Length: 584
Image (cartoon, rainbow, N blue to C red):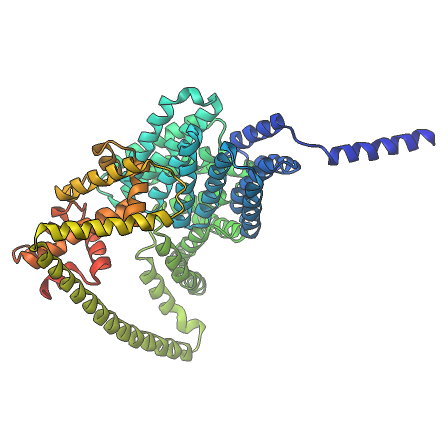
């Protein structure tokens, strides 16, 4: 009896000591290393290490642990818990005394929040978080964190369609990591190489999807995906992602056997590591291969698997949408009207909300075919079988709603046109007034500029600037920028952030910061505004310029294509270049 009592007392005391256990700094750093090492390969292990770290009473440890959970809880689809952890992480951060460690922790937390926002599809917010994190990484000189954040920013560029910029930045980042190789452990170096090469493969593949005549881009994508797989010994997440994308490349090349084998590899790895989202995509892609090769029964099996997994993950919306599109097509081919109608209706019910979401975030879809023209086909299938399922009154209600919608759109279109014309006329008057002012004596212009600068200095003093740059250096950057403006360097197609930074002998971070601070806009917005203002001025003052085609005007100011130029021009003026020219 005495032995039992002694044993129970030992357990109670042992439990009490365990609960009061304080994590040492050495234990914290060891857990931190484990979290980084297993970040891509074992998400569940990462959470286990974060929970262990959370037992500490040290504010730094608690801030980091909650920061990790911001990203990983969102990756599991638990947005509510992710947002809760965000508040907790920044609460503990504020409790830390001002120090280099606190600045470094800010960089970590903004990076983790950026990852969570990226997972949610909020690319603008993700970029904002990454840029904030980069400021603090630069402030502390944290090379590893700089590499991580620059890579994440490149992935955002890829996601919104800035493929060439993403490729350029990731190649630069590869060189940056090589130059600082001694800073990284062997495992860290492999992870960075894995991430960067995966990003390069993705950028090349997505770039091809917008330029399908450039087949050589697929060879580059294949090369970098294979390099990713070689570097991903410790990163199962990247290995799965690269294999999935490599299968897509084979699919584009019509090498269906290689694509099929690669997708089966992904299914095995995703099942083995319980990565449901990748499993859903692999099943969809296998079904797509079988559909393309007209093995419809097999295709249906894998499309249905995709649907089942999408219902669990709640994050594979696009796979679910396109799966139902293809199922409707197959049942239409197989003369099964009831099932063709069922799946076409699922597609149409989900298409518009998803399209709106994707358009808003400018996401580029990395699959075999785009969603674009699929809707018309689904509408035809639905119409073909609708009478077999519902009464005619359903159609009547539909036509009434369509009629009301058309009337509403017509009224809105008229109002938008009137608004655009008012904006355009005001803009023309503004530019004419500026032209007249230029003819006045130089001393008046100089006085005006001094007043503007004085006002700008007062305004800047009120701002709370986290990134500190010497004022003389800042003024020098602005002076050099204005010199480039006066030479109309911005008309060059190469007038990009890295190009200008190199030209004026500064780095891209400082240049981006100064442009944002002094001009109140990103470098891209600043560059585009200069180009568009030049076009407006030329149209007003040069009647020959107004006769040029949109493509010719676009090329004259360094735009790559007429579409992006017309979009920027309409955003500034409210009308197309042709409409603007005809109204002067």
